[in-house]
Image (cartoon, rainbow, N blue to C red; front, side):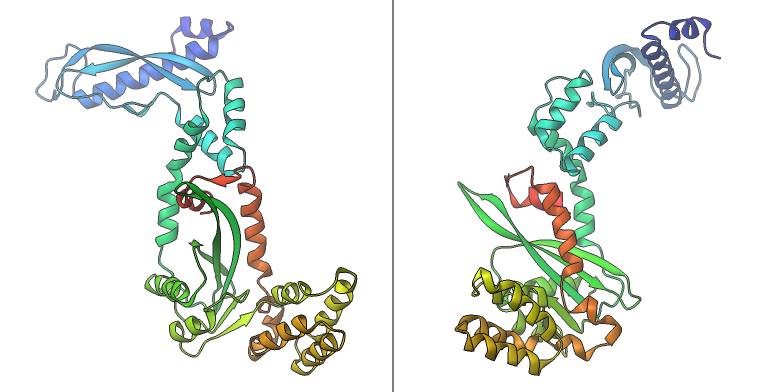
Length: 351
């Protein structure tokens, strides 16, 4: 039964504070009763702890600061679900701060927003520490088993500025996804790549295989160095497909801007036919774009591997467009960061 005085207090300006304080204090009294095995001053053989007064503790919530009366035990610490033994911020507030950080709100903006709720002295570093609560979830995601065969494997990289000792350097965040036999896409893991040689790719593929990756038939990516040999050794009988969008970008790097629209249309029309791609290369060479022609000829052997699979799959397996959309979303959320203090910080946010 709620006391009449509490109901009367609720009608006042700070009624919600009084009602919540009364309720949370009552919760802790009930917790103390269960943990001690007896009520205050009760004589019983089931008692496991004796009361040792109370301690005022502050609880910071989205409704403001509360001062609660926490019971104390003589034999052992009293534990409560109202707040952790050393916590002074309500869990809902912590989740709101961490969620804002992960939704691309900068740490300083979070600090400003929380200040309007009456919480001061919340530094950007404090926001980052609160966001670290997600580390366990990220690690579980990175280490989870891969339970379904994946015939199509996709990789796409984005580049971020990361602090490495006293220097800030650009490193690649490689996002991997697979399409299962039942047609569903499964995100596998983000990985930071210091280099793109065969050793890196072999090690990366070995990690995926240790988690249970099987059934790979085609690896679709943007043509990193060392990928061909790594695919051949890691997935016997599998081949790799050069993303056609990245092929077009590589060709256009050596083409004058005034001709890029026309060359793009030619490449789009030639896609899917080896003869027409070779004719496009010959045309570029005749115009003086020898480097662009050499790029087409160099990538041609790995440009049409997708045609060996079901035709209804072609539109989805000739490019990495599906995974590029994921990278764009990561970029949107990381843009406010600028430079990351460590690789771990980038993996936390991307993961």
